[in-house]
Length: 113
Length: 110
Image (cartoon, rainbow over all chains, first blue to last red; front, top):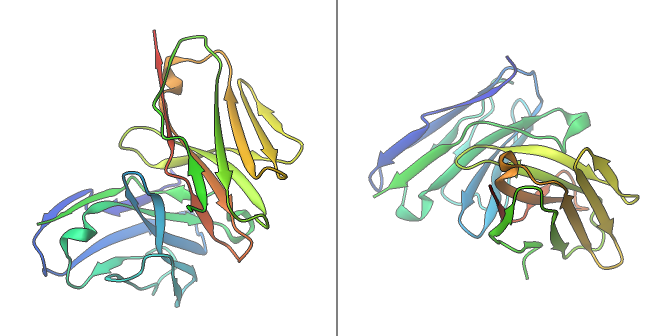
């Protein structure tokens, strides 16, 4: 089944404790991105990657890091999480010739205390 | 001003009703437009693209008005299963960037 998977789905952590949210897709998509979704603000792009070893900042990259060592994986790293990073996070992927149809993972609900 | 603005709703309608949502965008050079659907606590999924000539997919009709910079989604004969949040999405001119509206909540009741 073609899909985007994220882990963990739910996470409660404390300020300053480094964490990684994994994202993996099995559709051989070149393009991957991370979004956060907050009430009243819609989805905002954090980082994106056009291909392996190619990453770039989105609209709200502060406090996040990403890497793209393999085509299928695009982990999101929070080196020192803070309460304002409490949010619902989505990973997405798409083909470069069909960028507008993004396939989203199921989401990760993160709470930073 | 937000790049993409939507009425958050909720729109509460009975089954069988016709309901319409509008969405405005700020960048007149925006190239392409979409509606995504997001069920409660789930991921967004592409519902339909929006073309200048308008397009229809079953009970759903999407329209684009470039002069007034808005897009619309019309749902006819609403079903309970149409209850969801509808996200207006715009591909801005400056590269491969989708900008998402905050969404309009639709609740269809029996």
